[in-house]
Length: 377
Image (tube, rainbow, N blue to C red; front, side):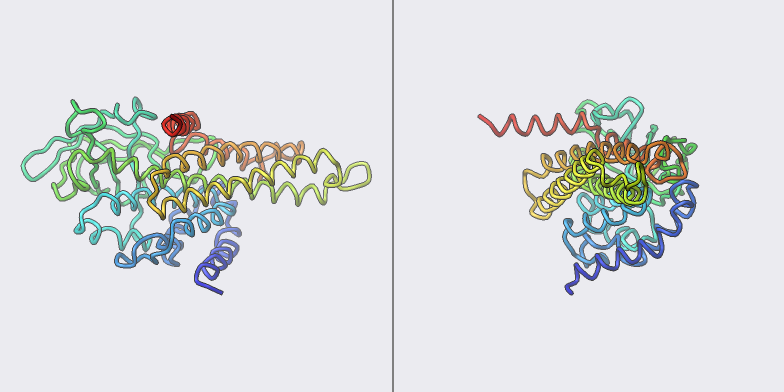
């Protein structure tokens, strides 16, 4: 057994022993999220794609996608927490100075510090060029003012990678990235959003009121924030694809188990052609999602110019597939699928999230279309 097989086996074992028994507390009651995140970090699951010099395992992003998908099978909440945390870690890895990497990455990789990635604002969702948060240089400091919304892990995070405009006249090219710490004066977190699904997934607004941070916490170079954000979001779309694929696989698993024991007209409904048709469609879409997920992750390893296109394809397809698979799972359960005591009700609501986060499905289609149009002369 090679290192990849060992870690994948360890992931399944950890998920079954340390996540599955607490599914109700995590997924329905919103408890134990921080505790389980720390455990994932302690056992090295966050470390997989990060360089060894910062405490990572130096493995491929493709491998990390496989691990993230297995975690998502047992807990969409923890998969999303890890995904959001990874965005902040990758932002520092991709755009930070060596001093910044040495200061923050080891503890973030071990799960000792949790991170958030703060880009979205009330009037700047799909178009980051419209962000209104400002950062004004004042001697050896920057002063940040503004509000971020829908920030995942907000309230639990220790580190926030915040995008703010340092040169508003340049639009997207005037955005810079900053490292904000939870204890910074003038920084606060709003109330947790009451969402349709994932009650345990921290999500809230951030308020920056004259937050004064040292210039050493400018992430990389001034006005390079947009580039850092776009590179980071490519990876974020892959982790979102992993989450959607894991959720879909869980929905199929639950549906098949139920169909094999639920009887109508004297036999299991799994023997009915209509149910088999649903199961076949669900299985085919999950396998296609896996292949697209792994291709996008592999292109990330290769630093391919096609990464933005295929990250968007993987995210778009797997999100759409997860919504459809979860819907069919509810249909197979019939009336019981509409009852919260059964996991498919939760999975159905949760699947919708993947059509929105890390860029809506409509934005993914724009990225895909523009890529194809450029390719064909």
